[in-house]
Image 1 (tube, rainbow, N blue to C red):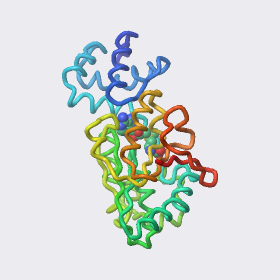
Image 2 (cartoon, protein in one colour):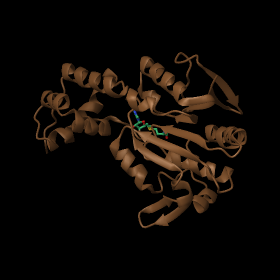
Image 3 (spheres, protein in one colour):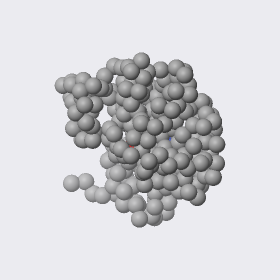
Length: 273
Ligand SMILES: C[S@@+](CC[C@H](N)C(=O)[O-])C[C@H]1O[C@@H](n2cnc3c(N)ncnc32)[C@H](O)[C@@H]1O
């Protein structure tokens, strides 16, 4: 068995700072073991004997190695139809309102930190249902992790991803394939998946005119200044009156006062004033 390569506190701090600076993810001291464990295989693949050598690689092969690092440090837990109260608020109340106000115009939705695609495809299914199959709009799904983006584009899912999917939705919006289930063409054609870092200012400035932004279970990995920066970027990306959804356990309290919290049944969403 290969011996575990040890990560010193000093090198951990430097790797942690680099991750934080590049993508807002703040790795607590108590999570040092996670970095140590998750990066072992990568060090072996690159034939490196120490984390100091790895740090050197990170500094000088930024284009390739940052992609690998982001794949390894991100947590990509997700599923179709996650957090039903929030989805009800979207599908039963807010989406119909926005569709009506647009009077046939296109609705733009962004799933920011979409992981392997379950969230944007879930939203697309509601959109298809709400508009009688003639959905007009676009759902942009973006994620930092290249592995996640590749899976999202393939859109083939197994039982675990579908654990909260009702038989009705399964029948209407999925097609059985050899590897599991894939989303039906009327759903897939609404969704565009892109690799994107939410702290890439130039890319963020390119996303405008959104009616809804979903950024659920992403900011939990960020500290307050990073959350504040992101909330301000989302504000600029939304149309006036547009909605920001954060995860069921998250809140914009102490993060942003620019948004108005709106209670929709038991869910809280944030509206741009
Ligand atoms: C736990 S998943 C949440 C997926 C989905 N939003 C949900 O709630 O089911 C968090 C995702 O955020 C992504 N992420 C973390 N930091 C990011 C950043 N700086 N830019 C873009 N995506 C990021 C991760 O790659 C991961 O796929």
